[in-house]
Length: 94
Image (cartoon, rainbow, N blue to C red; front, side):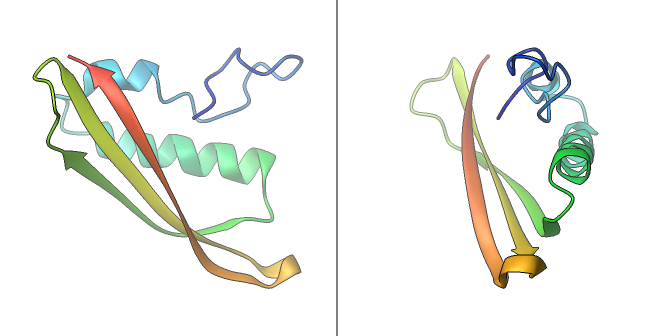
């Protein structure tokens, strides 16, 4: 969820997904989100191995807000963390 410029001293830290949310209608949005997340993880957390990645569009409570769930499973071999999951829900104004 960290965007470029939010981390003091490390400008390019994070996947920078916020600017991408303005392009939800583009057919390559999901692929670009996955590429950005993989790039950030490999650069800043190379010990994390991403396993699966899925994006789910959630019916919004309000018509002017879109909700997107990004779910990833990962493994960290060095500390015997096997197949954990992380899900982030993004609210995007439409």
